[in-house]
Amino acid sequence: MSRDSPAAAFVVRRLLEVSDGEIGGLADLLTDCVDGGASVSFMHPLPPAKARAFWARVAAGVARGERALLVAEDAAGVIGTVHLVLQQPDNQQHRADLSKMLVHRRARRNGVGQALVRAAEALGRECARSLLVLDTVTGSDAERLYVRLGWQRCGEIPGYALLPRGGLCATTYYYRALAD
Image (tube, rainbow, N blue to C red; front, side, top):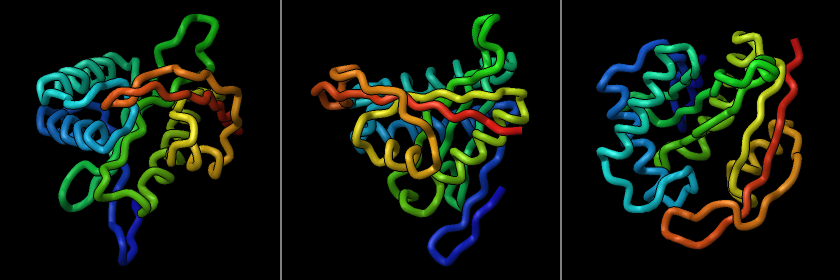
């Protein structure tokens, strides 16, 4: 999958294995998002070793088939990512969690997020999933993206998580039924 325009040129691809270099690029992306105030499970400042350790755990899950990882890249490297958590309880093998949808600040508003979400939906179908679920910060740019792409709102939990520099934020849950 690719997008080429005067404003942006990037490719979205699935990683079946994750190299050390790719872990480094993903760690840099995560750090950029946390530095920019994204509430993505980490507090500011995010130590590089902690960001790399997170992606090393994701890479191990990819290798075991528990996660399916997508990256968006441009000429300078990784500019976005999202993954599906495929490992679910026995009675929930039909679904996956959409997780860590991140877009580097230098690449926002160029269709990267939309391309990643659409690729994740297609990957969910490919992985025999009929339902995807996610949570996101209420009122965020990401929430507006999911609504625009047709995800269904389930509800909001106030005071759910801390923002990277402190202060509580609400989260909203969404789902997407995947048609065959």
